[in-house]
Image (cartoon, rainbow, N blue to C red):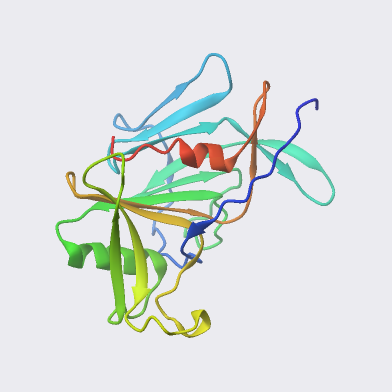
Length: 211
């Protein structure tokens, strides 16, 4: 392969995902609302979820590098019960094996209490009584916020802080539509096309929310 793979670290606020699981097997995206368009020049596609209110550009193939071999795998997309899974590995019926590479979840909320409830369900908090939400205004779009989570006692060490979340994730809230989404990455993975090398950071930068 002539292209050079560049690996970029993706550092975002948040979490080790302990989210709820679906009770039924997810179905591959075929709904009238959710569409895929493929670029004619490079093997990328745009996934759009009208339900969750986002779109994202992803390559068709994922390059995986393991100890014994490097191989290309087709990137599949499944939507189920407010969650969109991007994966190269089969999902089990309960999703408990965390076999997805990227997950984007969302819903429509009416107030701050529902925002907190959604975050609690996504990130496995048992109690958020002492957790505070900070809404950081997006500079390029009015009404769009990135949400950070802090403990009321700001002097706590990280290993003592029940509100601290770490990992590759982000929480976005659009005040106008009332939609909130989170995205989570389970492990670093590499994208590739026939014309250039790519990585997951490029796809996350293409995330459009709200539509």
